[in-house]
Image (tube, rainbow, N blue to C red; front, side, top):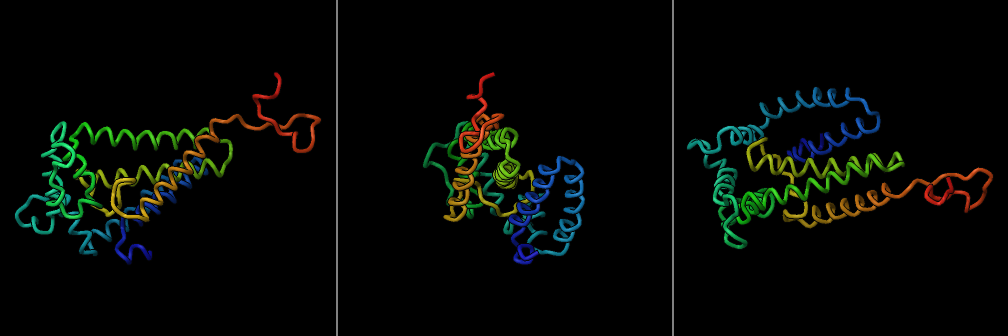
Length: 233
């Protein structure tokens, strides 16, 4: 509620989605996802009808190139022009025009990236994010500790949601929300948080690949727990 009152809808969406996904991972009940989607609809409708900045973002999402909306939708319009200017292989590193896109270093860093490296570079970047999320999911599935499963699943979802919201907003798949693209967008706190997330996921992925410890019958003390690979068949 505090984040909504501060008009930080992107972070509000991230925390709400994380809460619902953690419930699903912990209980393995699909009904939590359905309940979460139903609970999301009334606040979304209220924000779209009662909050002026949300209405503006929806208008820009639906028709950013209209002459009536161009002044308020210049950011997404220039971002779309940058994406189209990049083409397949891009204009080249340092050859783009990020200065014409408002907030190109933060909200619209993906548009600047795609303009200089093209669709090939943009898909390569998305593939790197996909690999990171895939490793998080594998760690969540493979780790034997329940807390580790929740942690890996939650962190992987946060990373995936940030990428989807930012790229989806730039390409008009969804309305803009104001989140930052991990590891690329300007912002020291965001960068530090994302590197911490990556470090935790690396540690969890390593733990998921290690064989689980097993108690040896008749043994006691510190040597009682050995790894399965050390226990004779």
